[in-house]
Length: 420
Image 1 (tube, one colour):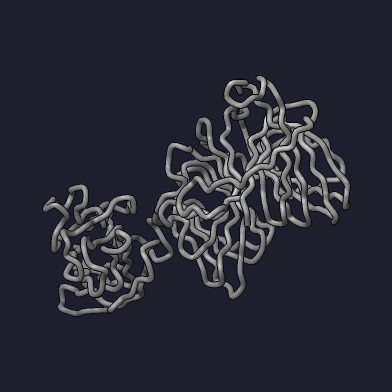
Image 2 (cartoon, rainbow, N blue to C red):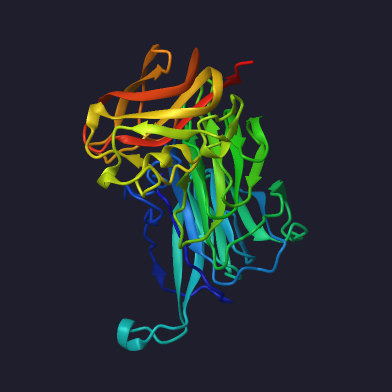
C-alpha cells in the first residue's frame, strides 16, 4: 500500500492550479520501501508488517484533554463533501476516494519558486482502498467519491466532548484521553498486519499509542493491563514508554490500525521486555538478587559493569547488551540465582551485528553438572523462552552455534520457584 501524506493549511477557496502529491517517505526507520517501515531495528519486528499510512509534524497542539475521535462517512458515486476541522487522518475503508485541499505557501519567496507570498496551490490525490492521508487543522478540503460509492474514516485529534456537525455520519470510536503527550509531537498513522501465528516484538514508544482492531484476533499485552484478547472493533491505548506486544495465535491473518503522538527526537520504537510475565518473576534480574558469577569475556576487557559488560544481560533493559571479545561459539556466562530454584523456564535474547555476533543455539549447564538443550533462536528481534524442569542455583549459558564474532546477549531470563 502506498502511503500518502498531506501538509495542509487554511484557505477559503480552492485555487485553480493542481499539484500532484508524492507518496510519503517512510522516515521513521529503514528500510526505505515506500510505505513500509521497520520499527527501531525490529522493535515492532517479529514477522509483523507495518505500513506507514500518513504522518504529520504538529506545530500547535490543542489544549488538553485530547483524544482520537473517528467517524465513518459515506458518499455515493460522484457525491462530495467539503469541510474543515482539527488535525485528522483520513482512511479509505471502501471504494475510490479523491481528497483535494489547499497548500498555502505563506513564506515562499518569488526568487526561490516563482510564486508570490501567500499564493495557494491545490493538492489533489486519490486514495485507493486501505490508504491514508493527513489533513492539517483548519484546512478547507473536499472529499469526493469517484465512479463508485466511497466509505472513509476521519480520525480527528480533539477534545473528548468535541461536537460533530456533519450529518449522516457514524461514530466508530473515541479513544481514552491521552496522557503525557510530548511537546511538538509527530502524529503517525500506521496499519499493522500479523500473519497466522505471528507477533510483534516487545517494544515501547516515546508517546501515547492507540489501536483499533481492524480484522482477525490478537492477544494484546502491555505492561499495565497484562494480556487481553482483541477482536474486530476492539480498542486499546497506552501512555508513553509502556511495554507492549501483539500476538496472533489463530490460523487467520489479523490487522489493526494505530495512531501515535510521539517525540520526533527519540526512536519511534525501542526494544523492551515484560519484567513480570505469566511465568512469574524473572530470577535472573540483578534487582531480584541475581549476579554474574563468571563470564568468558567482556568486549574491550572491561568489567562486568562496563559498557558491554555481562551485567547488561541481567539488567532488564534490552537497550544495553553484553558483548564478548570475539568469543564466537566459545562464549559463556555464569548466572548466580538468588536461591536454589526449581527452574521452569529460561529465556535468551541474542545480540547481533547483522552478519556476525548472532546466537543461533545455546545450552544450559547447571551447578550439578546437568546439561539441557540445545535451544534454538529464530532471530534477534525478541527474547525466546523455553520450558525446562531442573534444580539449580548457578546456570552456565553456553553458546553452541553462532555467526561468530562478538557474541553475547541483550537479556537472559530464568523463571521458577525456590526449593523449600
